[in-house]
Image (cartoon, rainbow, N blue to C red; front, side, top):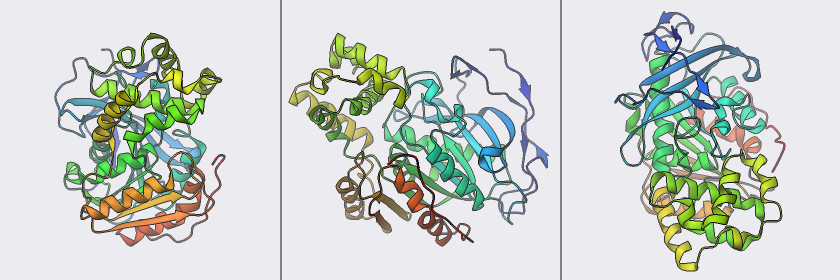
Length: 405
């Protein structure tokens, strides 16, 4: 593979000591990130390296969309649910100005559903997935946090994205923190996991495996409208008669097929429905909606009650985020008018995690807030939670509006 070798510039100092500016010291030379047709190029075969090891990095300089933050695109090693080394792409953002003593604390951001095609990787979008996400990350940067933002395995990198496979997503959320410390050794040792929807599910899995980050200490997690109850997804979509909801079902089936190759879309759906699914999978989320207009959900998911139950159980085994206790504090955020992630499901997640012995699960519900609106309405409580658990105490905060519910 032909690559252009660049020198990645990293922050000076050691973790726990005052860090210098972002270009104070040099890290080892790394290949620059490159892509072909929206898929990032990675070494073939991929050399075996520890999780969080950098594969490539590109410094984009300051990014005005994120308040002048320093912006990198990175490729790094992670591990999937089967223990296999996989390449993952993502973004690293560093606040402008001098870092605090001990280095910037880190927020590992986990995005919600954007699609499963490589062009849907947030690192390839100027707003990292949506305007609401850009506002959320800008607020975190302004509050004094470095931000890492994984794309998850197979989203931007070779292979199908393992959508809603919790271990894959959670490992990627943790391992990009390690990668960022290799890129910028002056980052602080304290980090937080924050995610929305699919990302809310991802950070709950990340919080179950915090030791993956080595010396970096997970101080708290914020799960915003976390995906859950995956065993109920397919029956619910089939019975909904809402064609746009089929995109989530097709993404979930594609994710299952990626982690279990015996579950191919043609074998699950038959040829006509599989062809429809592949047309949807080739688009990012909103772009796929016209393909689904006037589609009958029952015909698009020609699965018997028994098949739905068996597949749903497997999806739940891979992706339900409330089956293992979480030892660190968790803020669970939910909009009361959320029609994508029902409030009752999130309440059950809270109850289940508490029942497993999780010591500090804190629920917050926002009346009148929809699935995306809750991001803006909860931002001040989120920053207060981070500050209370060792992060930077917010000096000021203003909730923001989102374009959709």
